Image 1 (tube, helix red, strand yellow):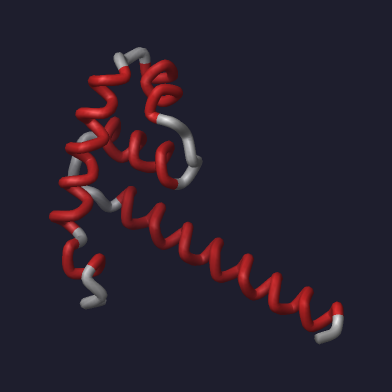
Image 2 (image 1 turned 180 degrees about the horizontal axis):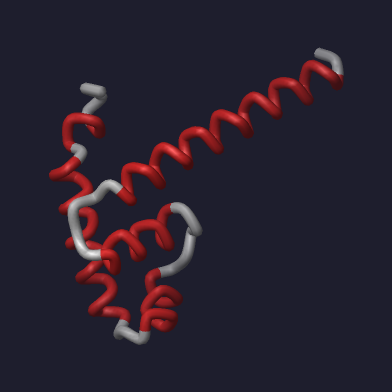
Length: 88
């Protein structure tokens, strides 16, 4: 395989990743819940932040953010169960 072909494959892969990330961000923003739950989910899974860092930034304890993170995951799973199961 030639270098230009590899570059094209890499470009396509990056484009696909950005499209997927945009779709996930749209799903997070569409969650029917408090902003802080959306914020925690986005920071954790899009920005790849640790819960400890998110807690420090928000001025909450780690345990509280961990609890909120669990709530946010429940909301996301409930609201998007069909999409998560491939029914989309």
